[in-house]
Length: 263
Image (cartoon, rainbow, N blue to C red; front, side, top):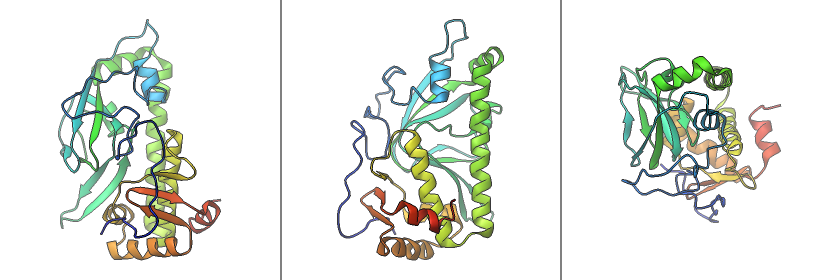
């Protein structure tokens, strides 16, 4: 069951030539990985600005550029790699599969996110990663990056901040799963996605690209798809949100914060 809503059609926020997956301002064709750091809309984010536009005396970091279609496996569980990957365009997610075959989504990845922060220190991808939309991503050579870290306190600080932010999000999700109601979980999740996108300049008038399906929310929030559907219906009918054709708008931000128990 998708997030498609019958009724007024929302228009996606204007962010240059933003593709449907909510990626950057430069739309790429598959098979064409010729983009550069200079034309990347993420170049001012802490990781990219510190690594790719480092001072001349800092060691250079080799970068590969990759693309993959929607709904494809980017990395398998326990796959090894000598690179650290950053999403440039599109959305993906990290997940785990239990022994019974159930899926738990651990995190959603959007432009500017590292696919896995542990890859900074470890060549093994602990959890698999799958694309939701078409995805373009950059691979930073781990050995080069480690040399840069050894000589640059600012780079070290950026990487520590990334790991700390990921830890905080994981702890908040743990609290959601253990103590919060379905309404609180869904409201907090939508507001957290909006906050992350807003930091990247991808929210306009509380509206943003949102390519997730209800099944994604269910697998991330520990709910059934039917329960997610009921919560979203109540949020729409009470005038809290609008969600149509891959675009979500938070209509009543104070009301959503109250539901989410955000103070």
